[in-house]
Each structure stands twice: as structure tokens, then as C-alpha cells.
Length: 308
Image (cartoon, rainbow, N blue to C red; front, side):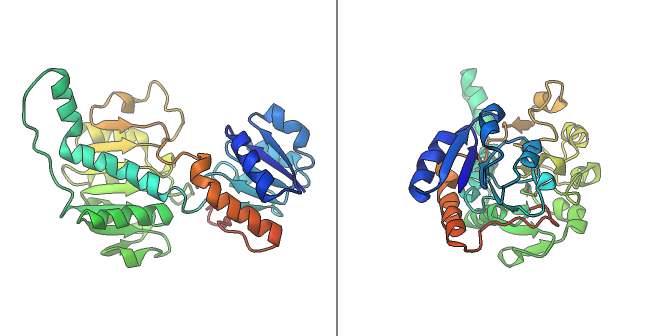
């Protein structure tokens, strides 16, 4: 059996795989040129960022383990006889910490206090508490469920939204995607952890944004397609929502001419809330390798009809 690892951290994975699958022939690649000699023979592919077109040149491919939670870049290009799995659960802690790092910083006035310090200005900033506020979590998979759990730990009321009703048991109130306007209008902080599908594209538009509460915060750590960015820029200028933290965008990197860069109430991070680092995903990948070698069902199998 031949395994191909395609990622910037290929060397780390290859070293671990030699212990998990000592009889396999394992190759690592960080570029398509390095991967090219092994495409025709690879049975298993562990990848992040690999050009989807390369999959068509892998006739012996049987299983692809995508080293991230989102598979929107490859799912449409995957041959029907190839099993596609994604990492589930590994990013829940780090991404929920990213969300609450910003919710706390924005509510407690951390950025304002830092600016005052830079100007040697002694002025009290009285922040607000998360306790008693209402948190809305759109997307209640493993990541969204952890965001909801942390919200409860901070004493927040939790509203949730999912297409199937999944995760409704951890919420004080549950909504379906058709109810997005009502859902968003009722929360103090709206966190998007949605996958990229046709149903989620543009789900947060002008009507949703301008209907948000005064002083509300929007955080997106899911996929950039969920928000209509031109609508968000205008809505932020009008203070609804009051603030936004964006980790994902319609186009990445975010174009230099995007108005979001210069809005004082928009806080940008470069798609780094849940990095696909070996230390985060190694346990999940190792278990799936063990299952594959033993002929057992794999974890994180993607439902192609849903796209995740």
C-alpha cells in the first residue's frame, strides 16, 4: 500500500505514519511537483491544500483524509468510488477559544484600553459582562457545540441554529436556517460556524445584519460564503452589528481593496482560528489510519449530498 501526504507539515506526518503503518510505502510532498511521481500509485491521500485537479490523476486512490474540518475545496472533485473523510472534533477547543478571546476582548474593552495605554492616557474603561447576554451559534457540529458549552459556562443564554435540529438539546432555543433573521435579531453575539454549502451561501445578508441588536457582535469562524461582505461593510458603518470579528472571507487572502480592512469596528484574522497543525489532528488521523488498515468504518466520512 502506498500513502501520499500532501501538506506543508508533510515530514511530521510521514514520521508518525511509519510507526502506524510500517508495511506501507509512505511519501511526503509540500508541492504538486513533489507529489507528481506518486500520484499514479497512491491508495491513501492525507492532504491539506492539494489542488483538486490532481485527484483525477490518481487512479488507485481509495481514501482521502482531508486534514481540516471543511472539505468544500475538494468534495465536488472527489471521484465517486473514493471515500472522503474530514477531521472532526480536533478543532473544537482552539476555535471556541478564538471566539471567546474576541467576545471577551470586545465586551471588556481590551482594545480601547490598549489604545489609551499607547497614548499614556489614564482613563477608566468600564466593560460589560458576558453573563446574562444571549449567544447565538449558527452551526451546531463539534465546534459550534463547544462554543455553546463555553457560552453556558460564562452564564450566557444560548440560542442555536442547525438545518437538521442537531444540537438542539444543548440550546435554550433552536432555529432552522429559514429563521435566520429572527434568530440573529434576538442575540447579543452571533457566532457563525457554518459549512460551505449552497444553502449557507449569503445566509447573512443586509436584512439579517441590519436587524441585529444595537451593540451586538458578529463572529465568523465557519466559511466566508455565509456573509455577503458588501452588505456587512455597509451594516458595520451603520452600527448593526456594532462589531465583527472575521476569520474567513469570500476570497482569501482578503483583497487589499476590501473596505473591511479599514473599518474600526471590524477585527480581521487570517483564517487561523483552527489551524490544521499536526499536533491538533494527529490523534484523529492516527485512529482513522488504524481503522483503515483493520477494515473498520472510518470516522468523519463526508456526506456528499450535504457537502460535509
